[in-house]
Structure formats: structure tokens, C-alpha cells
Length: 244
Image 1 (cartoon, helix red, strand yellow):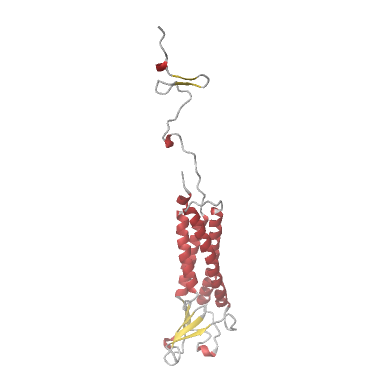
Image 2 (image 1 turned 90 degrees about the vertical axis):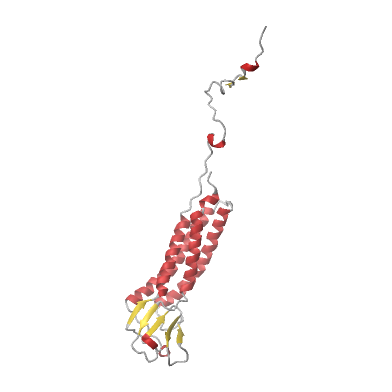
């Protein structure tokens, strides 16, 4: 017999992968180096290197107030490109959807481990897996969009107080995009593991599996001693009385 707790091993692994992927997804929006800019003017930007993230752009400077200067990028700023604005919105949506996915997946795995069959275990796994896929989509769309902007060397019209030109000499894909792709892959695998759940099919044990002997109604008797007749009952010759 297959128990319910024995059928959720892959789903437990999916829950762990989904939780890790969600944690990474929640952290990538705070990573500064989604896009690495190289600029010509190194008077203010020391080393000619700047890091463009989702919420701010940072660079090192030896002539300003601090060694590292960071300027915030807001959704309402006129210079904010659409790929960064979409990343700000979709990353927040991914965090919220991932929370719901973790709760549903954890609830379904808990019911499976403790043999609490509410009749909706598979449905819960399917919904949780779908939400993990939605979380991955909300994360991967801005990641690939920004990667395309880097490869196309698109410009950003920064205001003067950012000390950055609108067009860099060149751009490179930063660590934030690579981490985002990795977290999206974890979420996709997690959703697949959850949605592959199948309710265990139980079967009645055979006579030999229960430790009982399998009787055949066509047998003449049991070890040559007992004869069974459906109409006449049971007759044991050992107990027949002898006539004088």
C-alpha cells in the first residue's frame, strides 16, 4: 500500500527550490549592477565605471562628498526607461505572488506528510506550481528586457546631478541579470515538480500478502483432513464414531 506521505518527496524538493528561488528573486531588485556602464569622463566617476540597478545608479568618486555615490531612480521620474520601470513593478509583484505560492505549497506538503487528505491535495499543488511559474515570469520579463537593452547599448537620459552621460562608451550585463535568470530557472523547476504530483493509487492486498492461505474452492480438502461442502457443511472422518 502506498501512503500519502510517501508520494510528496518530489513536491517537498520543489517547495525547497521554490523558497530558495523566491528569496533570490526578492533580493535581485536590490542588486545595483544590473547594467554596467563605461563612461569617458573620469573626472567625477572614478575609473569610468557606473552600476545601473532597478532602484538606483551608483559609482565611485574621489571628489564628491563620499567614496560611493548612489542616485535613486523612481518610477515617476521622466528619465526612467520602460525596462527599469517594468522591473520595479514586476519585481514587487513577484515577491507577493511568491509568498502565496510558498504558503500553498507548504500547506499541501504538510497535508501529505501528516496524512491529512482533504481531497484537494493535488489541486493545491497545481495552484502553487502555477503561482511559482507566474513568479518566474514576473522576474524573467524585466531581466531579459534589461539584458536586451544592454546588448543593444540603449541610452538613459540621466539628469545633470547624476554626473553620467546619456550614452555610455559600452555596456555589460551585470550580476543582477545573471542572478535573476538563475532564480527564474529554480522557480520553473519548482513549479514543474509541484504540478507533476499524482495522488497515490492504492490496491487491495493479495491473499498471500496478508499471511493467510489462499483457498481454492475446487480443492478436495485442507491437507487431506478437512473436506468442505457448501451445501453439507464440514465433515472430519477422524471424529466419526465406529459402529460395533
